[in-house]
Length: 337
Image (cartoon, rainbow, N blue to C red):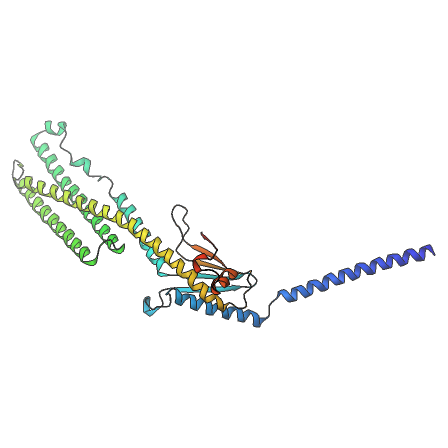
């Protein structure tokens, strides 16, 4: 009898365990079936997100034709994430304007590297005492070589200064530091300096050739005032390059300040447009979130983070759409990455 009772108790425990396992399995199956949305529900959410993106594009002015071949100036790419919300990537003209500043900064760095000391400058100095003590023929030869090297030195320095001035003027125009008329005037001024340089160098070469044709190697009297004029031309070119460089630094600072102000206005328009368009997200839960990436609008700086993200709660957007809060009062997580 004791053995029969023990067997019955063991069987009962097994039945209880089997029933619990069966119940757990059934609950997992049911919850899995509930967690998986139907194809119709997914399509409805995607359509709602598409309408939301179109309204957002209109509110931000990205639907206006102004790009290449009449394309829109910006775009919005969206993807629905079930149970989490949606991911949107916005590309706007502000990103292109940011690239102008980056290119101008890179150009300034390259000009600084190019403005290093001329390798021919050490040969342009006066002849050494040893050369002066040498024979007349050797001294004349040294003087002739030094004169030619000095011509190369002048040409390199002036050409480099004119090139730097031209690049600075072009960067100034791209950053809206000068208008097209001023840019044209600067180009004309630089072109005139280039013509003067070539004319002076040609006259200098002719003077040196005449001096070499004389048996005694006496320098041509015209070469001295030509050297002075070329030195003055070098001073004018370098002064113009420095002047435009200073203007460019100020233009970069002003452009950057304007750009950040434009980005702030763009983000305010983003909140207002998202607030209005959120009425289309009917199937989205209050717990879901919109992750909106503004491509190319991040705080680059030393951290080199080119993009900027806004995390907007669906619940906050619905409160805004109902008038409970203003678009500027939407609580959002914003960071650059």
